[in-house]
Image (cartoon, rainbow over all chains, first blue to last red; front, side):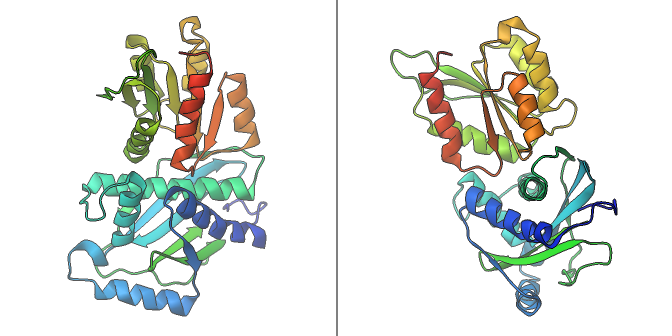
Length: 172
Length: 139
């Protein structure tokens, strides 16, 4: 959860990260989330990669939310642009084939990450209060894809399937 | 600012102010407010507390839905400003935030916040909140 080493994450905190994604998806987006292991995640990433060349659907978005308070750190949500579009359209109750403006997409994906981060912090620490920074959403370069392995400085990492598309969430 | 023209005979239309830095959340709340079975007058929107104060200074508002974490002026600062103004004492205050900590909830209670809705929320929760307003003597 934090770069402050005196507050290491426990295994239950890491489970809370997955629970946060599930809670946000099910309560706000009415979609079920399934955990997935590394091989399944890699297969789904390959499917996204295969969409490359058919518009922006093969691109990935990375939404980061930094937090401060009893501890500090950052939560990153990485998802295909197609999943991000689907989530925003779903949240706003728009027709399934609705086209989003770029700022709508980025703002909506940022809000998704904001909710995941907040839900996770609430589960990991019920008493402490945190301040969340404004989410930063980055469209990753063409051809980029998540590696499905945690980085050395990350203390929590989960991969899930949302609407048959891959999503990973990282915290440090 | 956008206006919803629905009006029910015999009830004063409710003017609502939605304060959130996310345009997505404002759009969601705007849609949800429209689902409430209440006469809604105008639905105003502001991206932070400072802009919300400008709306409060210039319009008659009966209910404020505010996020907590926002740039420029956050939701708690907005609520402190509102608490200091006697003419705004009857405005219903609702927090909608990812921060559901006990500390924040206690702080909200001290600032006369009637309801605290934690994100993620089901849309019907906010709709029900508005319907409760009809049973409370704020209209």
